Length: 283
Length: 273
Ligand SMILES: Nc1ncnc2c1ncn2[C@@H]1O[C@H](COP(=O)(O)OP(=O)(O)O)[C@@H](O)[C@H]1O
Ligand SMILES: [Mg+2]
Image (cartoon, rainbow over all chains, first blue to last red; front, side):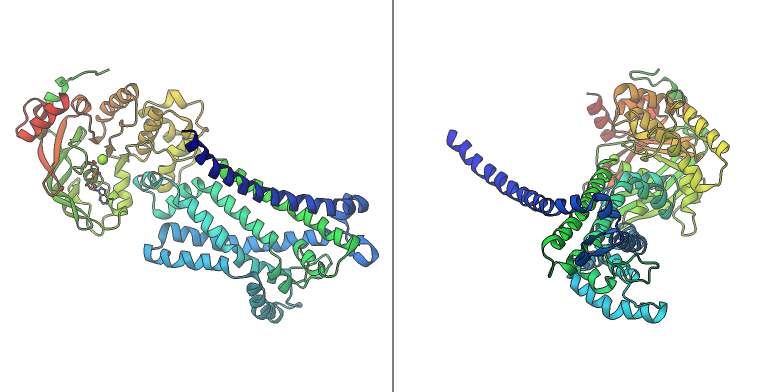
């Protein structure tokens, strides 16, 4: 009897240890980033760091406001372009597509998630950037190019999570609406989408998280200028690309400033994930 | 309130005095290759309550769903034979399903209010079919809830979520939701099976009131309920190939006191023990 209990305990504690090690890795990284970054924010001043217009490490100036603006603009653009497409796609898959078709489309969309981001960036550089330059003007390397690439990259997240949340609705809801004489489209619009809105909202927030965190593809098409952009055809720099571009040669205070940029990113992502969790739980 | 095994009122029901509202002739239903119903010929009189009874799996729900073409939602489901509403063949290609479902409402086994306010639940149907002003909708909501005997309980919280209501209230809300689109027929698929006895009796009372204006077809596995509320009853059973067949159909009093078919008698005595 005792032995058996002991036998039960071993795997239990093993799983616990492994789970703990994953958690402690997260904690270690977070602590490390904060230890490296916080002194610099303290030195420059929180306000000057966040709202400073000038990023010139060689002059000791560390203002990341243009990058915050860049991140927000690129992400908002990605949401404006990507979310409507993704929602149409998930509604189509959940409600209209015949089984065989959705069985084909679903893995294809998952494949989109598996394409390495450098491939997206390369593709954007070769096709999107010149197209923007030729048809819309500007350098081509631009917020618009970044938004288009990110819009494609967030599709799998938004599509699959919102599709699942539509499919998870009780069939009785749909039958109830049909039985009242509502058409399929009326049922989707007035019953299913409102009923699935928390899951859909969560999918969008997670998509935003993905867009905010993406680095490689964005570096390749965004132009990376550290100035406030005045139009979506201007180049810009995001928080992630700032780290990605400069980490290779940064040292000392400069390196600390990049970790400080990481803190800002981490906080943004944490807020986004928390609100996605909140959206999912609030029924 | 009616309790116990009351037949009194049902005896007056001579089938012949009533206009026929719904009718099937040799109706068959298939789910893919599986035949769920075979050659059902049945006439359902207007403004009365018809109970569909029989052991589980014999196709009662399937039969009910023939009348509002709910089976259309199931891929592979197919209906053969004649199904008529007011003498019109409802499975004709040109028959307007939206109009059909407005006329033939349905209440489900489990209450299925939409996750929205009480008011919006009732207003949902009318809003899909017509443009109403706010005050017109207010009137529809109020009169539907009154007809469903729910108004007094919810009139002060119309804006609250319908999911906060009790099971019995939710089911009456679903009835009110159907009434709001001004149906002629109300199909009910075991509407009380998820409810406690008190809520069940309230719904039964409500059904009796509604039967003065509407044609009600109710599926129930509860023999006492069928005996209490219905005017006519149809007894279904599975054949050896699991296809449902109509064994006997007649006034409720005849079916329960003087069944013609041995199988009906066995089933009913079995149920009342
Ligand atoms: N959507 C469906 N697809 C295939 N078979 C079904 C479907 N719905 C019901 N059936 C089958 O049809 C028969 C009758 O079912 P149902 O009408 O639900 O019976 P009841 O309501 O009398 O219990 C059963 O054998 C059931 O398995
Ligand atoms: Mg059933």
